Image 1: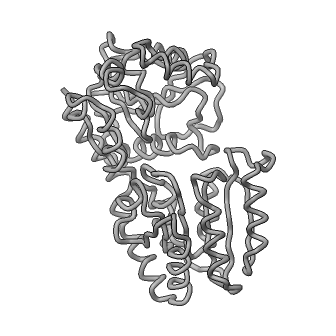
Image 2: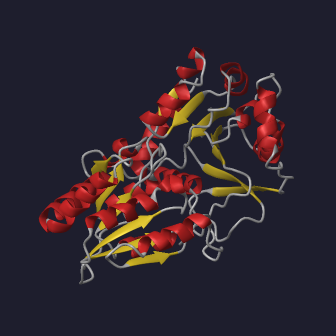
Length: 383
């Protein structure tokens, strides 16, 4: 038996009430392990700060620790400067110290440090094996010498896409590059599944994501303006954070002004917990992911595909690897390309349905059991 301890960001929640990507991935992997009958060999535990959202996902055991004192925001900049002088990042140490101590008290196992490079260093003298599980490009501010010092104790470095692995490699010394393995994310193809009946009415186009410029909701609205059709319905879902009751940001107010120039109706819905997404996605025909930034994977793309939706997504980061040939890719710098893709799908129901079937088939073959097996192969090969 080799227990797995998932260390997530202090203060993050292991609950369906959150929209955070990392808890969703951890829940998916733990569920995949159970479906693959690997729980006896790899029992799953989540190292979780006390007081975070309930109910918790039932897929993994919980090891709670008392909340620590969070580092001030300015500490990140002090840390980045000090790191270039060979000083350990004190804010990162302080943030993860309590989580690391909670792991240290557990029977020896494998620690998956999600987006937490410092955890391997904190546990360098423990009996645990440690793995950095990178969901984003975490090392942009690291020098190679700092990466060698902090990640030297890591047995492996996991990236969720080939694109992310390439970015991480650029920041690592050669002896650590050889430790990188790619484990793509999966999708819950049971929870996210096509609805038997589609609501009557016009073609419905949906965006789901945080309301920040990097996610590109404004690109979709520009494409909708250029398209100039009134026989379409657009729904923009999300908030600038994970609080549906938060006041609108400047960007969100800008989006509403932009929507007023679209000839078709545009509805705005605030953030919804991930548990509400299947019902929401089930009312749409086309899912658009117009991200500007190098999305390492984009979980929403897989969820839309599992729903049997036609997916139109930016050709950036790990998105092409995620959707393969089961969706339509476009350059997010060119809204006219998105307009053309939407026009084609709106005007050709049979093409839209073909993409939906291909998307569903790809999601079923890339579910969380599949993703878990990729991870298990890496873990079984640890030194």
